[in-house]
Image (cartoon, rainbow, N blue to C red):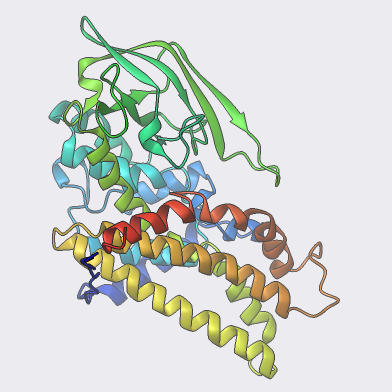
Length: 385
């Protein structure tokens, strides 16, 4: 059997001309606004909520940077936004509240939304006052998103929603949910799906917390019981929800957060090792640093394709998979390299970061698509299945 094998491309990202000045501005902002009272907040920080920091970030113009100025955005380039994200994540800034709205909801509304939706929500997103969550997974439709069963029935003046969303990150903080819903009765798989922008204060919506094994509250289950939304809640074209959602996932899978979640503990490990580490420690630091730099180049290549109007879905999926592997490997490698008497329950910054990451890092390869699903996407994209 003849099989056509596709390839993926790597492009060079040209940094913005004022990249150094922009980095210095962001670093000054971070110094003035970030709290360093708990080292555990400095790892996996894109899941850490902080209302004051998010509001200050919006006032400084670091949210909605690529959105047009007519909606309150910065009108700046994707490369400038990337520089800001790198600095925020490397410093462990608590950006969890606005992260999804800035990364996905805003750009998706700009591309598919109505003018009414843009004017209603984009300015608040840019100001750090409107937060969003993503309604994808359901019971029985986790990694297989095309099996969603939450339904939208057309009624006079709008839609009636019934169903449940599961593992919904930040729903307890969010004002909006962008949900993938089955809008055509009897449809199956990728057909008959639409996206809706739902205000979570709407009557009939119940949000229940899911507390993880580390005691954290990131996830929720959200129930919809005869929830009425008006016609303008539909985002994009009815029945085209699958194509829109997969485009949205490209934005989710390739950013620097996919390989920087564990960076804080690596930096602290380097500080703890000092300027003259032993050979074994130096080897671990060298290996992890080289892999970090490689992932950074791959991630910036995806950004270069996005900036040029291409769809880097395949490349983004690869970055997400390799990035999550790296984030987990950082934890394992540092834990193995620390002295035998190292106390994970100790008071040092490294110990506090490592003790948290040991508990939460296994979940890194689940969010944004499980490893098995991602590799299936890569195989299909390369023509191998």
